[in-house]
Image 1 (cartoon, rainbow, N blue to C red):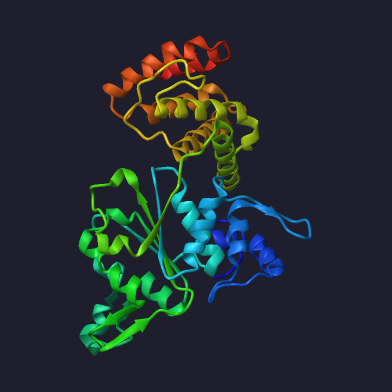
Image 2 (cartoon, rainbow, N blue to C red; image 1 turned 30 degrees about the vertical axis):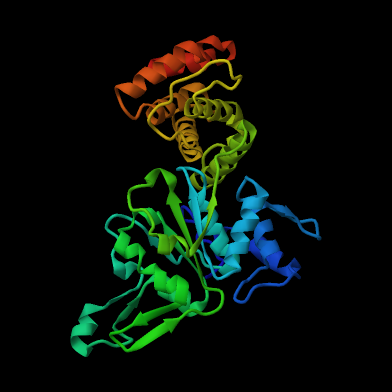
Length: 364
């Protein structure tokens, strides 16, 4: 993959956006590297969690969370087991899988998106039917899946929303993960995985019961559960960092100018999804939505766009009020009752939130 970034690209791949950091880590990385890895497990962990290199250069944190979870995830990739990142929506499962793939194999693009319509060919291989009809089964007619390419090159393959895929498609992974081979019976051959090949899958634990993994497939994965941020400060830091990155791409005002509003949005989301105010004094009803960190990022980014294009460039309560109401009130009946009760019993009683209360009342 090239490290050059096209300035017109809205979101570069991780290995492109952070090519400089990956190169500096490789330069200072003198620890043992598993076969096929571009960095050692120590360097991969430092890339994700951030740190200072011997020459004083800083590696920015890509994930804010328990160090041990990241170490377990990285250690899993160094074994013959695949990695399953499990968590509620918005816990950075996709973000972590992308950066792990970028650090381990320098390519995060070998991706299969799991949906109810994902076909077996997306996991195994397909055919160029024009060539197939003209030439019959041949290597030239074969269309490789991202997993097949990862096996041939010894890279990391990613599968998003594994439990959204039909069960029979999921089970095509069993031979790949256990035998590290992919048979191609039409050609009488097989693809054997090179060293460095592994799979990182993500799953939403709210999707349990949709297409649960078979026990045979689950045994091929080591599961790491990614939690919601421990504290308000951690979540505010995560939101501010991501909003700053997105804002730079969209040429919006810098996130630090709206830290007060970021903290209020995060506080609202944490209190409503936890069913308790931050001081622990008041129990709350929780709405039907997830109110995840990812949704808080979306609310703030939309608010910054409003401030930039229809305001004075400073993020204010009126800029985020509409986004918050839209995120909380998913069910127009039950969620609206929850939101109104929260506004009147919690927000209204906070004098420093008076502007926020008025803005939310106006859009509600």
